[in-house]
Image (tube, rainbow, N blue to C red; front, side, top):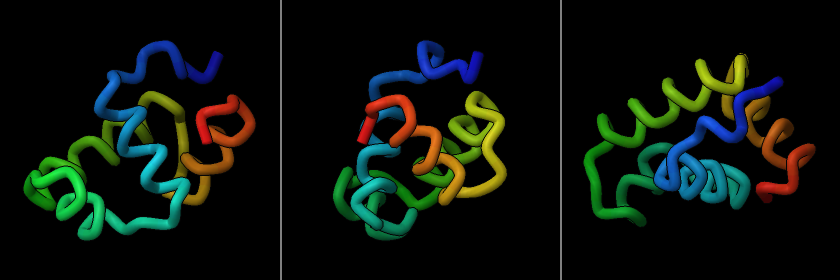
Length: 67
C-alpha cells in the first residue's frame, strides 16, 4: 500500500542514491541533471511513498528491499 510499484525507473535510481547517503546536489552531479530535476523526483517520491523526508524515503526503501 506504499505505492512502490508506482515509482519510475529514474525515481528508483534516485532512491538508491539517497540510500548511499548522497544529497540532492550530489545526485544531480552523479546523474548529470539539474538540481531542480532531482528535487522534482524527490518531491514525487515523497508523495508516492507518503514519506515525510529523505530519511523516511530511505527507511521505506530498506523495508521494501530497494536498498
